Image (cartoon, rainbow, N blue to C red; front, top):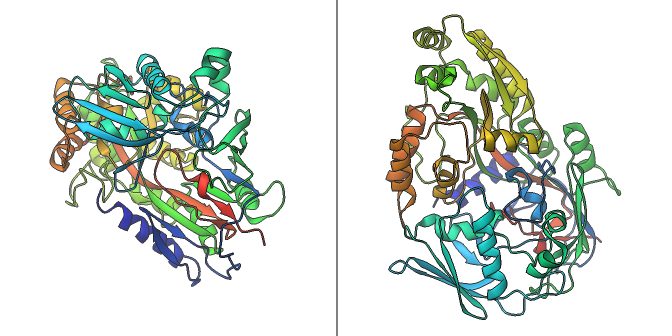
Amino acid sequence: MKKAVSILLALTLAFSLLACGQKTNTAAGESSPSASAGGAQTPVPAAPQYGGTLRMVTPAEGAAPIGLPWKIAPSDVWLTWPFLETLLKQQLDGTCTPLLAESYDIDTAGNTITFKLRQGVKFHDGSDFNAEVAKWNIDMIHDNSASKPTYDNVTVVSPYEVSIHYPDGINNSSSAGWATTGSVMISMEAYKKNGEEWTAEHPVGTGPFKFIEYVKGASVKGEKFDGYWQKEYPYLDSVELVMIKDVMTQNIALQSTGDQSIDILNTNNGDQIQNLTNQGFAVQSIPLGPIGFLPSSDDPSSPFAKPEVRQALSYAIDRDAICNARGFGVWKPAYQINAEGYGGHSEDPAFGVPRYDPVKAKALLAQAGYPDGFKTTLYGQPGMADKDAVVAMQSMLAAVGITAEVSFPDSGGYSDLRGNGWDGILVQSNRNLPVMETVYTLLYDNKRNYFKSIQHPQELQELVEKATNKLGQNDAELLDLQKYILDNALFVPLYFTYDTYIYKPTVQNFKNTGSSSGNLFEIWLSQK
């Protein structure tokens, strides 16, 4: 992950060059860059200004609860940004810096991580954040999370110090796990007073904004928390995260002013990124990981139980055609999981899943016993899988004899498929994160069983454990793990997308942190 920051800088520069000759300035700030809009610039005040409401479009579905860490859907993480915080914050280079923790110590001999917590931190309900509350949160996350955390014991060392024990040892994901949305700290007092059902819909955290309203599928609103522990923040009076799905409506909202306008747009739509960049809006982008096929390989009665059929899926898809039609110079064909700059990426151009060859796809289907093809279903991941691209995939599969129905379930329906099993193919993002071990542990460790319907052979599990149960450099082990997944076509990558934020020149100090908490607390709006 050492090259991640330079890749982000390069991508920001690349998008600025799309902007019809307009010049975009890029400056490094901490571990992520700050880009300004091209074209005519509005004079920016020398000092940050307080006040104003920031409205941001996110790809969230807004179908699941956002107040309990163990119930937050992966597609809804953005909606927690204003309200909930973690012990640590992960930077683009993979390092973890203190947030609600003041510091932390890793003891590899004792298999523990000890967090020294910040004092004086208050939850939005006025209750204190301390070691007792942190332990309660960590225990609740352990007991309720479907992803089965790898720690087994939490000890209160002092009023502001907790120690977490990992029976199988410390690895790179151990600390990184405390920088993810699944480990946010919530008010123990609010939970015990109001119950789980209420808390699930009313996030009470330590973040810079207090929760006001959650209209599922539409918006989340928050107002400035005057008791925020970082005393000079936030600059904004309020934030609103909106879920506008129509691309044209998104564009109009970004281009307009007034109550229905937006300030920031988060998207991975290639056409949209190109068009808005050309209009002079500021852009920041980092690799998001590949969109690909996740066939239901674990069902012995399914055609996808046969490796020849799964490999045929890769031969059937013309990635260049999809990227040319829907990527607009932004998407890139994907033949491996790990993007350039991420641990376990291969520089070998021949590495990865098979390239486009429909004749070979048909031959493999016949070899597997399906000379006339078969019927299946493509399920597009909400907020991630481009609908037109999925329709193109449907057509390409039909050309080799696979007749696929297309379905686009909502966030709740998709999460149910992923967690309880599906029959067919998920068109799913294999997210890239600064610490790739976190991804592989979550998605492919059979102890987590995140993808219910994929094969988990013992050899895969051994490679997962070898790559993830290690502290320090492990690119070789990650590469071996990725190669096994690709050789067996358990996941078939199709195209790389990019986590892109497009914003108005009035938005100051925005950073695409690549983390699960954003930087809403330090954003400000130039209002004069």
